Length: 153
Image 1 (cartoon, rainbow, N blue to C red):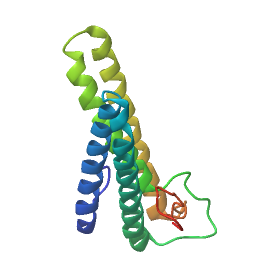
Image 2: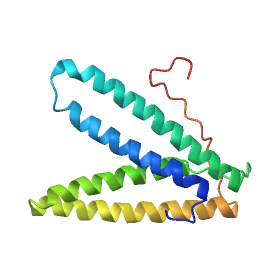
Image 3: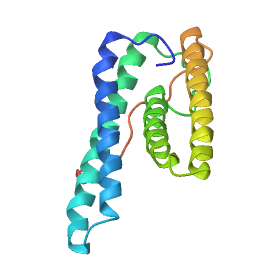
């Protein structure tokens, strides 16, 4: 975490990273199976995506309760929960790329680029958190209006 993590965020962030890992695996699997197996895996991906968004919203609500909102300042372009989700996915991408990098310089170079991107993302999240704490920026609305097979959601 690029900032002190409230204890109530440990569980949803850990769960978010685990969900991202399961979704990554399902997306890999869907590219390797017979056509008849694809619908079931795609439904699972939708379920995981729905859970992922619920966890991001939970993180954003926890942080919003701690920081409050200053309505007379500009919002961030994305919520901290969304940025932490991107950090989780980037961490998974690095791990998968590093496994491939054992076989060649091209994959090792990609892994190095991804690690630099992760450093930049961590820095950006830390700055965004500082802006929120200081009142220079406010979080965007945490609710996402995503429909993953749930009518009315």
